Amino acid sequence: MFSFFNSRKYSSDLSFLGADMHSHLLPGIDDGLQKMEDTIFFVKQLHDLGYSKLICTPHILSGVHPNSPETILPVLASVKERLKNLEIPVSIEAAAEYMIDHEFEQAVSRGDKLLTFGDNYILIEMSYMAASPYLHKVIFELKLAGLQPILAHPERYSYYHSQFQQYQELKDRGCLFQINLLSLSGYYGKQVKNIAKKLLKNKMVEFVGTDMHHQNHLHTVQQFAKDKKLYKLLENAPLLNNTLL
Ligand SMILES: [Fe+2]
Image (tube, rainbow, N blue to C red):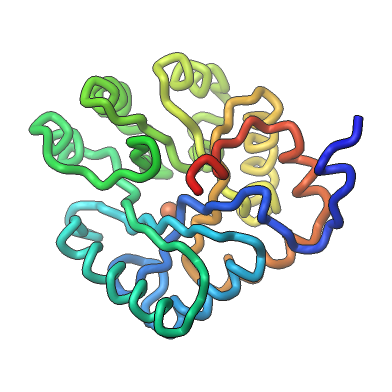
């Protein structure tokens, strides 16, 4: 069968994804980029790779990255202004990457205003050390509030690697999954790569993201975008990235 993927040239063209929905590009508010000049440089580089929309998702983690709409949206506005002045044709938005901890669970229970993107999507993450005891409750409450949770990089939670049924349970509870391009490249090691591939093979992945924090990430994504393996891996995945455009 003739397909886009068979006919395409493997030359750094991620435009089939269209939108990246996980990145730390907004300057100076989390552990991602720190300077406006770097933000502009990274946005240009990602645009050159084929992205036309970048949804920035600064961490919200109480005590470490105490972000909120009040800290995030003004920074977004200044980045947008700079991009407009420089006539860089990329659409840029912001939401957040919410750590599922006690504070977040309380915020969801209270019905606090949360930062979402696309079709009421909300990006959530867990610690790399242990699963959050609030995970199932939060998924339930978010869905009850009409929000659609997307779990960031499930392949990086090593405590689930030997319990693949945990991933299935989260899917059964209605959680969407976002894997990192960096995981597929092998950046975090073989085990993470294999789990990411297994999730793709089982059609359990709705989004891929860059989770871009710094220069090493950018360099790795740029190199991987030249590798035909990336396109083969994503060939039959029912991804929703380009529905965000
Ligand atoms: Fe992230």
